[in-house]
Length: 103
Image (cartoon, rainbow, N blue to C red; front, side):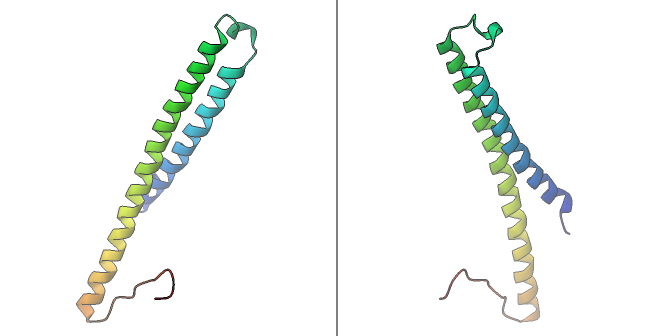
């Protein structure tokens, strides 16, 4: 099986998680340092604190989405490697192993 849908879902999870982080950081920056008249009624310390909390929430949510997508991608890669090893052992050949550098 190719697990194409699952791979696309993993990539989409990483992209959406990155987008969540970027959008929340931009919104938190705007909220914390904006000089718009309707935000002037709040104290600047409260706006900056709200921006920090919002950016932290974005990092937690987006980071979780990125890590989840990458973990599922790693599991799919391990599954493919296991199938290759199983096939190589069934045929009696040595499985090929890719090494990052010289031994």
